[in-house]
Image 1: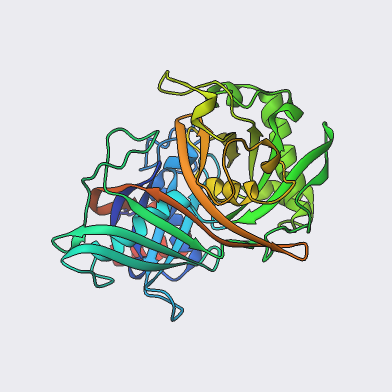
Image 2 (image 1 turned 120 degrees about the vertical axis):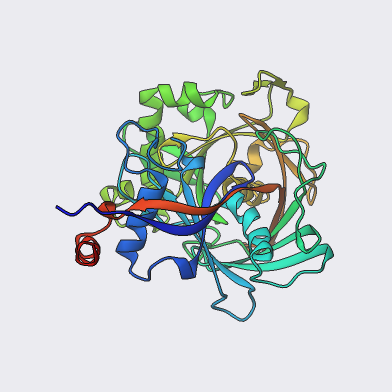
Length: 399
């Protein structure tokens, strides 16, 4: 049999917020989705039954198993299109069901650095990003130096060592990102029937990404548990997945619990608690006075080490919805003020504007500041043997 070579695909490897991803130009990937996803899986190193993705660029956890595709805008109010893919670690699946807020912070700088959009030689760049996963616009504002996105700065993120240049992300009208409705059931609080738990109080909110928020006490948790402890508790993880699947059906994301189990990335499920003293991954203890709400969030079957950005934005919106599970546990954040979220890596500051009129809530905007940095650029190598049979056949014919 003819030995098949590796193919080279131009790409950059970028940290955005507390995530990392391979970032591609849309023009460098094939239009055939099956071939494209085979390339992505091989580049990341999935599926890997060992969970480490050593044969690819992934890092064995959901925040490090991601790709972004950037191309020309498909709508007149945007500068670029951006598609996010969450790559499963143990399964051969690339999930495009939702966006990644953290990696959204890398898209504007990527577009400027790659010459996809014009920017001043020095000053502030403004890039309007159309996220195709949610059909929403994200406005990225960030400093540029010498015509390139700035890297150095004094903005610090808990969970990321050092400091960097700030990227301000404004998510316009984030409500209904996946379902078309801020409150898919029409309620700020639902009584959710969950297998093995009975009825659980939950808030099902779709802003930036769909999320289901439940009180930590409903799961016999304090809301201060660290990710490894959550992940090691098989019963807790089983219950959280049952909540996620039940919420998926209630939100209209899946027609049945079986179908919901196959949708890996949405809704994200979060345990929330009133602010309290809590340990962090750095060993520092977070004081109750340092945050307004505590959260532990899970997606793609893994507890997050830092709250995912779209989850944080959704939480900020939920905090401004009267009577929600989040609003009932929020403390010390006046209406219109920033909200400080306590999570396993420390804190994150977000803001949200929500209008309620005649019993109908509207999410006007949600805002957060991140940092980003390009870590590597060049090409990823993918063995042609990993691609679909028809592609391999063409490769063998060429050899």
